[in-house]
Length: 88
Image (cartoon, rainbow, N blue to C red; front, side, top):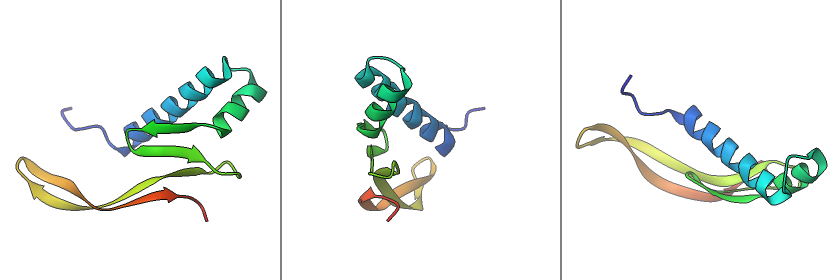
């Protein structure tokens, strides 16, 4: 399959990146220390900055896109970048 990876591959990578950074900050995977490190994580991911608010919800950058015809076929064009999007 020559298709490019989809959004689920990217989200899986970002999730693994955030957990890996928290484990490194905690110095291991002991649960209480790891959970505190995870809450304090502020990662720079391929999709932009990601951190967690006081309720443990992700705060991240969202990109509003539209599909346009590119040189080699349809592609996404960023229309707007919204930083610091949270659950509120």
